[in-house]
Image 1 (cartoon, rainbow, N blue to C red):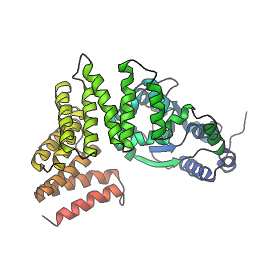
Image 2 (image 1 turned 180 degrees about the vertical axis):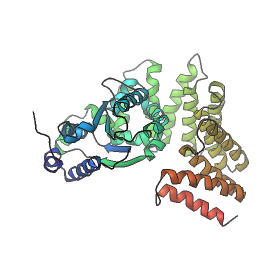
Image 3 (image 1 turned 30 degrees about the vertical axis):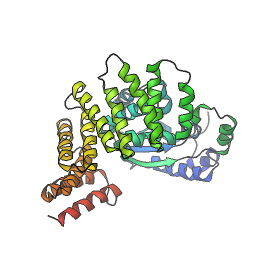
Image 4 (image 1 turned 45 degrees about the horizontal axis):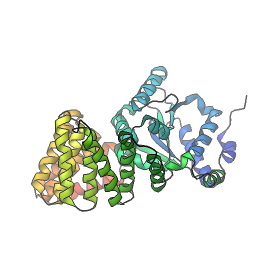
Length: 391
């Protein structure tokens, strides 16, 4: 049996790149601190770098506190992840352990869920992790981190630290020698688009093409190519509208995406048209208190505001808030942004007392989430302080 390694003499052979060695040393020291209390940590890098880190800890003294959760062995979704973590804590009680969560990219692909669906579901169980004192380390590629920011920003906002690892020279040579290597599809949006376009050419069934078309449209939107984003998203709508049951939340989500593309293009009338289509479907197929319905009301409110229709915008935003109030605790973090938006809306309408009231609520919630000096908290505070001078 190999002797347990110590951080001081094992970092050198683990990584050769000085930035990687430095970041790994910080990562190791952070996990070694006995006073570390819970939260999310992100390790960003390619699978080869992740595997180096996992191999290191296999023989390290910290391994006694580490739980490995491979999302594809066995294949689990976010509910399975939640159940695995809960089961582990039934055994360890209040002990502050470390959970390494990895192979998320392969998990998403095998589930055929798409990045959006996966991260939206992960966002829904964010508060679950906060029940425990353990540290949850998520290993992701840079591309997947961008998808998390796009579809689960609230979850991403709660990440305490990010440690980035770049490809070592041998991995760079391997990628250059094997341009079709599987991991390359996650390197950047353009590479991901090429990969998905190659994959979709082999699929004739329209329903199986749907998630790929949607993802390509999302990628083009992300890199600012709105014309191609619109082209691929409209193709998803064409397929969904041909299905026997047209009134589905999938179609509503596609209409919402088209609306967001038109909004980015500055075509407000078209953006509103498709957002109202999404809202109409969601009102007919979803529970009256469903978060997706609140999203449609909120998105429509933002468009109305951009069009200068402040009264109608405020009406829709209040409907979104009413839904959130029915399903969330009064001081839930998800209220911070709606309260801030309501504050700016009321300020635009020169209703300064109401604007100040919502601004105070937003600050009270944000102070529980972010430390003093955090940019997001500073923005909310500055808005409140500015309104105070107008009351």
